[in-house]
Length: 329
Image (cartoon, rainbow, N blue to C red; front, side, top):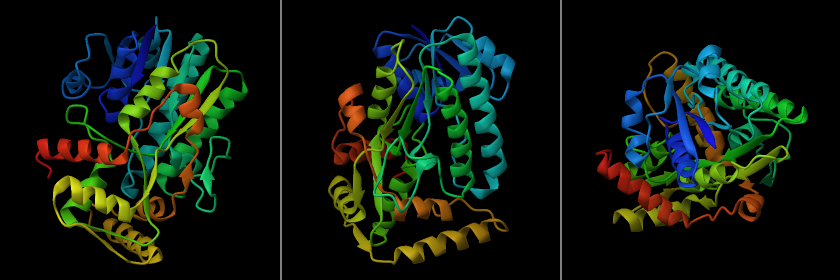
C-alpha cells in the first residue's frame, strides 16, 4: 500500500514510517520543512523522496497528501507539558485530527491509524489502563488536547470508520536521526542528577520500535475499529535507578521525596514559569504522570499484533547511547 505518514520528521513518526517500509509498503510524508526529513526519517535509511509540503492544520495540503494513498498513520501532534503552549496544543491537535482523520474517512482510506497517548485515558484511581476506559485525561493542556481528539476519533469509529487507535506510554529508545522524543529529557535529567525523586513514582516506558511495529501491523485493510494500549512495562524508580547505574557506570540513587511534594513542586514551577520562562522537565502535568500513572493492559497488542516488548534495560541503554552520541550526556 501507499501509506501517508504525518509526523514523519518526529521520533514516533519516523520509526513508524521505517516499520511500514520494512513491511513492504511505500511511504509518503506530509511535512512543513522537507529539510527536516534528512535529520529524521532519512537517517533511518528511508527513501523520503515522496513527500508533500504542507501542514496538518491546512485542509488543502492534507487532501493533496492523501490523494492516491491507501492508508495513513497520523502521528503528528504538538506534544508538551509547557503551559505556555496550551493554546497551540489545543488548536493544532484537534484541527490536525479533523483534517487528517476526517478527510481519510471521507476519501475511503483503509486502514487509518491514529497515534493517541495514554494521557487521553489517564485516571490515577484506576488499577490498569485499558483502551475501553472512558476518555478522561489530566487537566493539563496536552491531556485536554488528546482527550478532545480522542472523542473525535471515537465518534469516527462509532460511525463505522476503519480507524485504529494506539495509546503509547513514555516512548524512549534509539533516536531517529536527531529526534529523541520528549521522554528522553527525563532520562537525560535523571542521569545528570544521578538520582530520581519520589516514593511510589514509576516510568510506564515503551520502546519506540515496539510502537512502530504495532503501527505497521495495523496496516491491514478490512478490519473493524480497533484500540490498543502500548504502554510498556511499568518500572518503579528504584528499578530505573539500578538500570541507569549499570548502564552509565555512575552511582545512582532514589531521593524519597513524598509524591505529594513533587506534585506541589510541579505546580510551583508552572507558576514561576508564567513570569520567568525556563526549560524544565518538571511541571504539574509531568509530576501527575510520574507519580500516579497506573499499569497498562498491553496483552492484546502482544496477542493480536505480535508486539514483543523488549527488556526495559535494553531500551534505556539505547536511549543513553543516543544521548551520548548527540552530546547531551
